Image 1: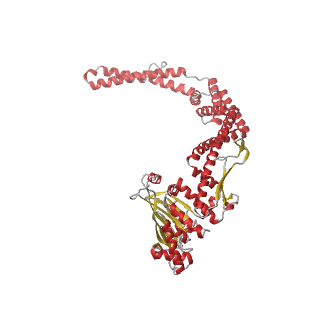
Image 2 (image 1 turned 90 degrees about the horizontal axis):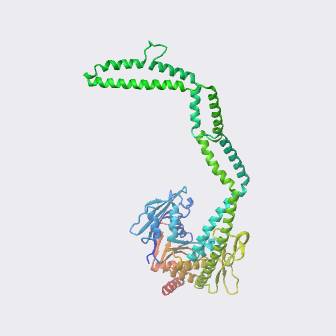
Image 3 (image 1 turned 30 degrees about the horizontal axis):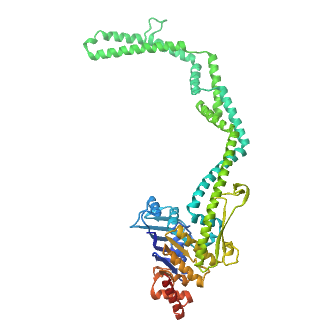
Length: 580
């Protein structure tokens, strides 16, 4: 099976590292060097590539920014490749190029496959590519939430399926509870709102406004207010068009147009152009007679009744009282009334809604209790398998008598959900508190690993957990930062042997100070400073043959040229090769 492999990292201006290239390979790679030489910067660099938090303090003094570039070989079609391509990244012959820049001011930029991407995308890809473990991760394992997450991760679908159903029911229950609390706690405010809406709707209903009525009344009021002037103007215009009966000798437009038409009628046959003009004058005469007739009718129909004007103004005042409160015009007032009526129905249905929500809440609590019970059972079954597998791994890590177990418990809570006849507290992940227990030797009672494990034991528990995960939920690359802290002697040899076996399934990179661990590595990298205290390209090199023996001797006795240390180093290498 082809898996992703971290092939190379280039680190510039990061901490003590000036400019260095870390060449990695499949299998087991050990990174060693003097204390303070910059080994941990390898872990820090990879953390940045994987979307870790940027810190301006990481930038080397005097540099404008720190840059970390990584090259990862990824199989075609893997989740990481699919997600990267969705973001616009391009692969270079099956290799994904990742870079992260941190400025001295703390600003950060990320690039993936030649494309600028959000830093969060790198963190998404990290879940499918690399598992990083250091001292902080060991401390994280002490948290109960992390222990529950580890158990759920190991259980896989057996827990994921009921947990998904539980989470959906929990989300709905919270939404119902929030709505129910809002209705009940705001009953007074909602009643006041209903009263205001009811008053407004009654006020509007009493007036009974029609859509567009305000515009119509405004036009009518304007007309009634100027009735005399309008009638006089219409009469003068009518006389000008059709003549004044009281002045038979007067000349009007209609008479003049008729005369013009008669004059042309006599000669129109002699010229088509003049005939066309004669017809147009005839049309004008018809139009004049029509307009004159309408003017006469307008004057006759014009209502100058002051009582009607008073009624119109009274109606307009009633509409204005509504528009001052409920909208800028009658259309807006009617829209407010429609919305308010719907809202009033909702508010007046509070009692019914409270009953519905209460019934739904109670049903959801019953459903949630059943799902929580199913989830707890799945966790209990997975916990037995997980604990047995970790215990078996600890036997291979020089802890043959240690026993790991899980305590899965619930807390009584009268406001909780019923599970197995008990009312217990619940949350978004179920009702279980999961705690990892360790009995380091026979006769010792199981105790929480936070209290019952030393630093070295905790390191080995962490490694055992990761080895178990590698068999059920593997990632392509594991990076351990001094996971062997607090360990020595036979336990260190067993850790080295276990890491070597893990490396048969995945790429393993270990930052270590123990020669017993480094001896098992397929490849050993030495990180060393120059005279000015920086790490350069020449300061990260692959150790082979005599150079590797010298470094293991230094790690053993602090003396590269000690014959005893050299003999021990060669013995460690030989034993590691024989074990492989």
